[in-house]
Image (cartoon, rainbow over all chains, first blue to last red; front, side, top):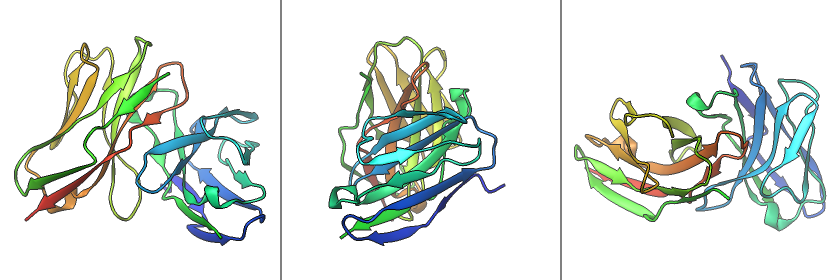
Amino acid sequence: NAGVTQTPKFRILKIGQSMTLQCTQDMNHNYMYWYRQDPGMGLKLIYYSVGAGITDKGEVPNGYNVSRSTTEDFPLRLELAAPSQTSVYFCASSSPDNLYGYTFGSGTRLTVV
Amino acid sequence: AQKITQTQPGMFVQEKEAVTLDCTYDTSDPSYGLFWYKQPSSGEMIFLIYQGSYDQQNATEGRYSLNFQKARKSANLVISASQLGDSAMYFCAMREAYNNDMRFGAGTRLTVKP
């Protein structure tokens, strides 16, 4: 059981470049999330989705876009990368039941130079 | 707006002793869930324990227990019999029942000394 899979694990971008962080889950979870974690800080929600075709902004959505065409996949798009987007990005999924918390991917460490 | 506060940036504990990591929260929603996650140096987020706002008893999972004091809005994590492998960052988080935004505290770095 793979859980939540994120690719790539590491990436260096130049300022102004674009990229897509991939996230896929095989648990048939309805809910999926993208978080960023800046050094020494907790996680902040970028975007989330409650099901295929439905997405919504979280606390820090500026500079990012998402789509949810299938239950399994929830890619995060960075347009015009900026140094402020240097962070570790976590994708997570959950069922509507709060009980078991979120299942997190292993993270993508992104550096924008 | 929901808010999570972890006031201990770093904690030290001797191996085999117990340690308490503090967490307070703020919400006006009567229905919510509280979570603790462990983040070792490898970076992954590991779910440890969950407490629902209507749960009458404190949650326990092996060596982890959650000291839930609802009136004080605190949800402290107690780790008993600390092990060297417990050295990690620990995050408290809360999710309101009808809110899809799980909010995290800033974390506490726990170091277990041999």
